[in-house]
Amino acid sequence: MEACRNCGAPLTGAFCANCGQAAAVERITAAYIWRQVFRFFTHIEKGFLLTSWRSDPRHPFYWRSLMRRATAILAGLAGLAVLGCVVNRPMAGDWVVLGQRQVNDRADHDLIAVTSSRGDFRRIKITVQRASVDFHRVVVHFGNGGRQQVEMRNTIPAGGETRAIDLEGVDRVIRSVEFWYDANTIRGRRAQVRLLGLR
Image (cartoon, rainbow, N blue to C red):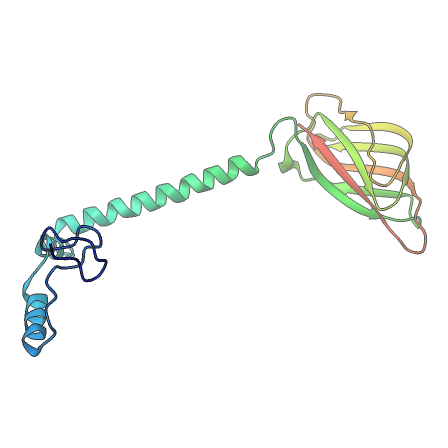
């Protein structure tokens, strides 16, 4: 039995069952090259003419296919946009950063402005980084003109946070939060005070 010249497997047909090599290897001659060139230009794959005809902008199928592809792309982009909104939207029960300030021992009063577009919150708290801060009083200003004052009298160490402060009333859209403090900083260093809200 004749063996494949490429892998040595026994041949049982016109092609090797193991590697796909042709059983008969034709020598490359001028006649062989002419046959290959002629075959390339005269043998058309099935469906080639139909595909070419439908690719003509004058054919109705061209525009239907184009509209289907555009619709699929737009639907995919819209799905990604919705998914991004869902992923990035803070879930109920998550603390949201409303703003922050850099404070030092040269001042004793500061304010963090909060845009009304953030919505209303039922609790707030303050975190401190880099240096400890002595808080004396916090005043929450609401979008409806109301205010809530909270006496603190707490020293919050660096890396610590205040207790959660329950906000009073129904309309609790925060406009700004004022706080009075003493920052335990030296040599121009600053502490970072961050305001967080809970929906």
